Amino acid sequence: MKVSISAILVIFTLLLPIMAMGQTVIPVAEGTDQISAAIATAQAGDIIELSTDGGVYNESAGIVVDKVLIIRAAAGLTNKPVISADDTLAVIVVGADFTLNGIYLDGALGANPTAFGILVANGTMGYTLTVENCEIWDFGTPDEQGSGINGVENSSWPTQAESVSVINCIFGRMEGEHIRFTRSPDGVSQPGPLKDLYVYGSTFWGQGVDEAIYVITDDSGSSGVDDNDPLFFVDHCTFVNVGGKGIYPKYIGGAIIQNSICVGNDGYAARIYGLNSSIFNMLWFNCPDGISFYAGANESTQGVNILNEDPLFVDADYLNSGDFTLADNSPAVGQADDGKTLGDPRWWPGATGVESGQNSPSDFSLSQNYPNPFNPETSIEFSIKSASRVTLTIYNVSGQKVATLLDQNKAAGTHNVSWHAGSRAAGGIYFYKLSVNGHASMRKMALLK
Image 1 (cartoon, one colour):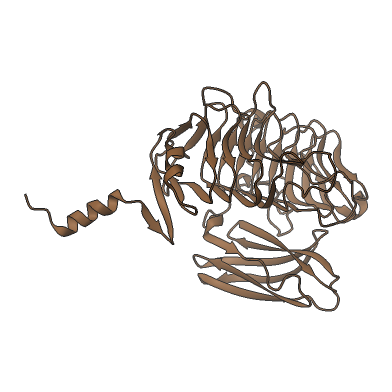
Image 2 (cartoon, rainbow, N blue to C red):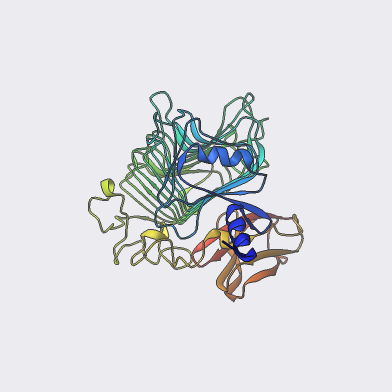
């Protein structure tokens, strides 16, 4: 039988990992220890792509990410691939730059309950962690409260993230915090567990005994922004029955919480610290202690458009069902800073998922401004993979909108926008936010005066 050269080439191509944009894409079918086996052969920068629709990928000893990697779901899957572990400590231990996209992490599916979904390894410094379009559920053991994402920094366990981004995710049923980045109270000389935390378009639900998001970088109680304070920005999120304090950027001056909903906590909906922190365009309900202002933060200057009203979820049994879809007449409708609805966009009236669904965060990128620091002008570069509606907005450290640099349709490609701060802008920290079809990314910059 004759076999054509072209047929041989097709077969040979199918047997090779797929090359994309300089990265090797390694397809992985469901099974035990399949992901760890793929990582062992991968090079830094490669993509581990889980190809089985709704497949279960169980790891007997958990996954160790010791090189720059992406683990993602293959395109076109109806159900997220599930990753679990028999290990009692963590499903994924991160020791390098890492992105997880389109995955369901399950802490209860393995042979033993697992404490952490993602745990930062001892000694990991300067890494970036991005978790997009994921679901993270059921973490905690009899000996450990557990968290969905956990980064700890102290003198015996030094770690620090350059940036952590959590975008369009759902967290549920944690024994402890859903997201936790903390330092021990052994002095402020340690660098702190992270520099930047950005959480957008995500939902935190149920059975937590502590906070949904808990970050502490020092124990000084400082009332203003200083070198140890990270960017802490929570935007368009929904929190339901998550524990004691909901959103808790402890001792962080300059934290911003906006456009969010918090319902049914045991204590606070949120607590903020410092003269430069802000919480605005937010609805809370059935949280006995409301919003807490601490160490200089105060209700008269920081509590802008804070609504204490029933959000009117459509499902009366939302605490058990996890369906937080808002009614058409919800008081959250139209109350965001952009005129849209508060909370995670997937629950907006008439939503069919994350807002519009036209772009995922991986479809665009936002670069650090240059120069930075700057005076008086700086350039901001971003890239989009397809023609999209793009908004680029500047905020000050109080979360007030300073300028809208761009609000229009842009063609696919790389674009540069300049901001001239002018003589009236005060020196200090500013944030710039890129929104593309309902998804967003944010960075901070410094204006010198």
